[in-house]
Length: 242
Image 1 (cartoon, rainbow, N blue to C red):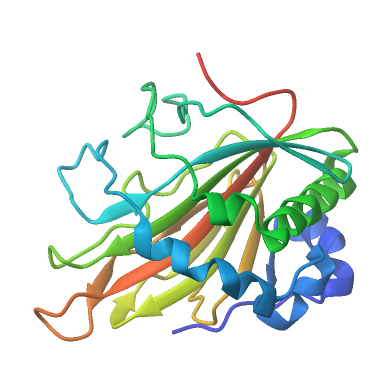
Image 2: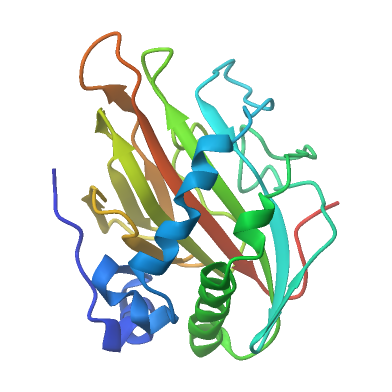
């Protein structure tokens, strides 16, 4: 496995401007106003994720919830629950349909660490793109290997149609694979690495890069493993939707 290309927390915005991506080590999350220890309080929420009923490849390996917020400065507002929607241009497999997922757990939404994380991500995005309110969608995922293989990104390498994507590693259990791959959207350059440490955080300038994660398999055949992540997207001017 390749080690992530760790970013100096003092240069997160500069790295995003230069490379279109940045990777924060768990010990560097202070730049977002949170700590790995504080985020650990959220971990039990991944043990209560309902199945994703919208997988068009027939798989049963993905579990998730969904929530929407608006962050304006230090103010975090929970938006009325809505469908997750992406255009076909960004998600050829699942685009063009309204996907209604179960809302985020209340203990996640009301956690001080959760609100601090959203404010910190919005602050970084404003420094990168210009200050404004940010429309945020949050997706806690569990990908498991109960069918022998799990696909974190069944749609393949893609963009999300937003301004910033944050992918936080929550945990890995008895799996191999799950390599993160980031490529220039309009060029040949790319990187590959595996996030293994809980709360490692990958930040992506969605206008400049595409990303994917390779499938996971159990370390021991017949045993169930899983990969838990948190994906948060920030978009200007409103949520995506028809």
